Image 1 (cartoon, rainbow, N blue to C red):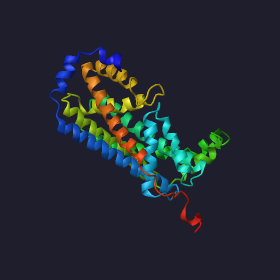
Image 2 (cartoon, helix red, strand yellow):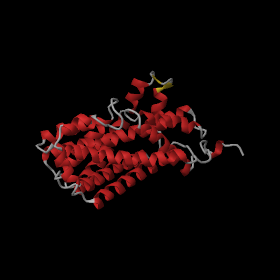
Image 3 (cartoon, rainbow, N blue to C red):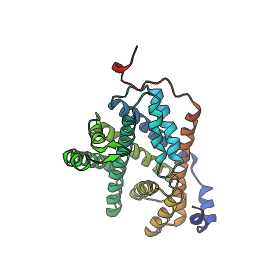
Image 4 (cartoon, rainbow, N blue to C red):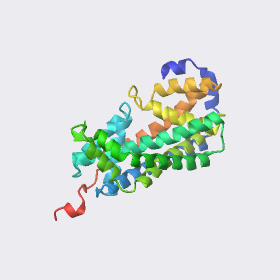
Length: 296
């Protein structure tokens, strides 16, 4: 990141920062907070759909505490620690692994859908806004999930005899596919990225970056994918290099790429700060087992 920044015209960057619109930047952070709210609601719904009667306060605490470790680890692998937090609420190892895999699968599926569509819009210079992106994302997500459902027997046959961390892949697949309200969870996953995009549009406007809607969507989504490479924490460095090359290829000033990357980093730091607060809050009473299995 330092190497990328050192190659830029720092005076031009400073001049743009002197004329920022604080209100639009604040609006972007508020939309990021809304995106985090959707993620929390989806996680709580996911646990309920998997038959885990965990109280709202406890699931929120588990989400934020594990998110903290995810934000400070390469490729957010620290989120696997959720299995440990869930175990403290009476959730078995298999159920914990299943919930982590399902949560990551939903994120990746929604990210892939929105990234694919933003790629198409950038290539065709379709800049009609997020309405088309929202509708197309939902339709593509539903279609992809339908194909996955149709291929379930083949996947189970192919993976049934394999083992993941000592757990049968076939059993994990059964648990994943038997999760209730999968389409609602997928819709919430797509929705969280669209809210994040709205926040990025507000923040780019706040810095007066003349970047089209389609370019903003494409740069934001692809940088999220690049940030998942297990070579950096929170995408710092890898995201900056990617955005510099992308903006240069599109004929845009690379100083804009640095500022655009800094906006994403600000969102990550905001998410990090919110998550860090929960490390000092109590987790709540354990409600991990379904009520019909709890002893009086």
